[in-house]
Amino acid sequence: MKTLKAVVLVALLCPSRGFTAFESLVPGARAAALGGSALAVEGGLVAGALSPAGLRGLRGLAIAAWTVPSLFGIEGLSRMGFSAGVPIASVPIALSVSTLRLRGYYETSLSLAAAISGGGAWAAGLRLRVEMLGIEGYGQTSVPALDAGVSCAIAPGYSIALLLTNASAARIGAAGEPLPLSLAVGCAYAPGGTGATLYARCSKELLSPLEWNLGAEYVVVPEFTLRLGMSTEPSLVCGGVGIHLAPVAVEYGLTHHRQLGETHYLSVSIDLE
Image (cartoon, rainbow, N blue to C red):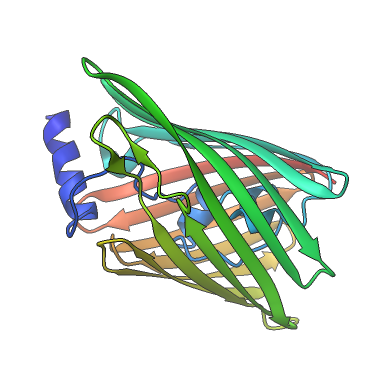
């Protein structure tokens, strides 16, 4: 039954391409609640999970962990991740590990990311990943891959970002199965004095249709934030909340797929600026 559900999951999430490992899935509750739209967000370690350029703003030691106990309600199909970052000689550096598991199958990603910025107006970052795949009865394999991102504040309240995933065109396994290669463009708009931020993202993976993501978050009070989002490919409706009691932030995200149902995300981070 688990295998059947996994096949259905692959068919629904990857309708126009053959299945490859390490399909792009949002990391953490904030990203999930915003429908994966917040590519142009800045704010240190959590933002750096979306793009290495997002590490700009990391001013001290930070750690974060997130979990998805049951992806799309499939028993045993879980995700989790952990990251830690610190600025070294004014350059923010982050180490991360994430894993997706189903009985007899796992995908694990280890990454090292760094970013530089100029005058507070722009940032550029690189992320080196080592992707490891294991299938019971078939063995294990791994491959390095490289991501590159840039972001720029183009006007007060406006920012844009670009992310190239798998810039090294890495392939995994004896058959040379390509890892997802994609280009994403994102923007953010924060009207001054409103407490709201609007996000949009468009991405194109090789041999796949365009994916669109939209999101919005509203800071009700400094300690409490509401979030909404949506995405296509797969089609998801999303929402969540964030509770920030410095230096700790706890975030919850919920995504809903009309065929596969709901997925719950939980994140905890500590930012010691």
